[in-house]
Amino acid sequence: MNSWDAGLAGLLAGTMGVSLLANALVLLCLLHSADIRRQAPALFTLNLTCGNLLCTVVNMPLTLAGVVAQRQPAGDRLCRLAAFLDTFLAANSMLSMAALSIDRWVAVVFPLSYRAKMRLRDAALMVAYTWLHALTFPAAALALSWLGFHQLYASCTLCSRRPDERLRFAVFTGAFHALSFLLSFVVLCCTYLKVLKVARFHCKRIDVITMQTLVLLVDIHPSVRERCLEEQKRRRQRATRKISTFIGTFLVCFAPYVITRLVELFSTAPIGSHWGVLSKCLAYSKAASDPFVYSLLRHQYRKSCKEILNRVLNRRAIHSSGLTGDPHSQNILPVSE
Image 1: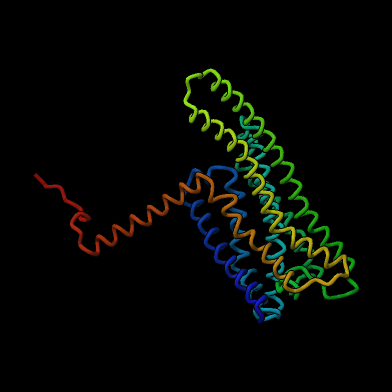
Image 2: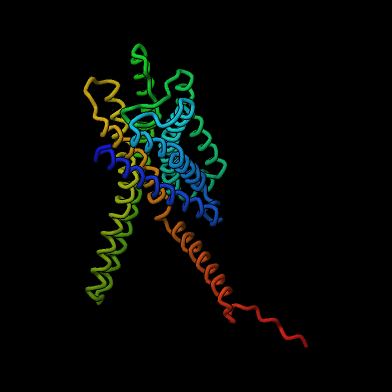
C-alpha cells in the first residue's frame, strides 16, 4: 500500500469516526428532547441520521477494507447487500435533504399556516415516499445483477461486468443520478433561494425601521449607532451563509462522485483509481457533515447536548462522592417526634 492509499485509508477512517460520534449524538438529542421530537423536521432528521449511521457501520468499513486489501473485501452475497444499501442510502440521504429544504420553505414562506401544512403525518408521508423512491433503483439493480464490487471506487456499489450491457447500465445509472442527485439539487436550489428572497425582504424591512429609529434618536452615542449598523450587516449575511452551507456541502460531497460515475460510463477517458476512491470518500463525508449542518449547530440541539452533558457529570459527581463517603451526599433522615 503506497502513501496515496494510506492517506485515503486515513481519511476514510477519520470520516467514520466523526460520522459515528456526531450521528450518535444527534440520536441522543432526539431521544432526550421531547420538544425536538414534537416537530415535523425531527422525522426527516431521524431518517437522515439513521441512514448515515447505517452507512458508517456497513459501507464505510467495507470500503476501507477494499482500499487496504486492493480487492473485494467480502463474499459476493455480503457485497451485493452492501451495494444495495449503498445505492439506497445515497438516494435516501439526498431526498431527505430535499425534504428538509421543503420544510424550511414552508416554515419561512407560510409561517402562519406552517403547523397546518407540515404536521407529523405529512412528514411521515414524505419519509415514506423517500424510502419508496430510494428503494426503486437498488431493487431494479438487484434484479438485473448490477450490484457488486467496483475496483475503481474500492467499494460495493452499482457495477456491471458484462460489456454487452454497458449501454443499458449507463442509461440506468444516468436515470438514477438524475432522479436522486439532480432532482434533490433542483429542489434545494428552488426552496432555499425562495427562503433567501423572503429573508432578505424581512431584513430590508428591519433595516428601514432601524434607520428611522437612528434618525429620530439624535443624541444616540456613535458607538451604539455603529453597533446597530454592524448588526444590520451581520443579519443580511447570516441567511446567505446558511443557505450557501446547505447547497455547498451537498455539491462538494456528492457532485465529484456523480460526475465521476457519469464520465466513467459515457467517456473513454481513463480515470485514476485514487480519484475514484477520493470521490467516494467525499460522498461518505456527507454523513459526517450532516449532523453539524442540519442539527448540532442549532439552538435546540445545543441545549439538549448541554442537558445531557450536565446529567452525565452530575451522575458522576454523585457516584464519586458516594464512593469517597462524602457526608454531604448522604440522605439526612428527618427526626421523628
